[in-house]
Image 1 (tube, rainbow, N blue to C red):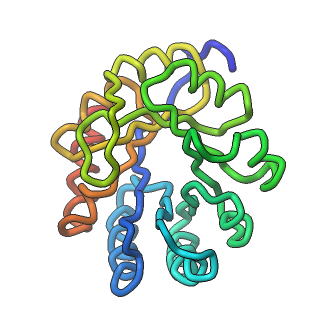
Image 2 (cartoon, rainbow, N blue to C red):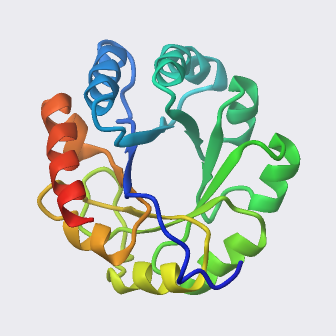
Length: 218
């Protein structure tokens, strides 16, 4: 990783995270969200995050969502589970600090798969992830979140520091809404990872609201 202060950055984009319930009518909701994004190019990744399911059931739920993402040219990322990511031929895997090391995931999944790592509020963990070959690092939670509780509460300055030092993209996560996202965009987040702000209401309206606020903050 090298000093990149003079390298131009692409506009901040949206990284959707699924709710834990992805069956029933959720595929139609994902289609609605990505269709709304199609006018703005805002959403570039979707993370499939389920808990407590065996791999066969998780794969069954993932299949239609993966097809929808492929149709919209949106990366399909599996949360935590390297084996499931390999089974699905997913575009990437997102790893927590208790999951496989990025180096081991790379060996299992190959060079073309995107590997992201949760780094909480730690500069050390982020640099370590980069050294182990991660494709992006995620900082958070920046705000209180009902989706996933976290005692870590970084300040936007960590995004500014990262952007001033490294080329590797950074993701901001945790309680992000259209109303509070602007400081994170201005601080240099390459992606905003969002869940509840989209799926707790009308997904089309939420995507459009994020588009307005994020582009206004560039």
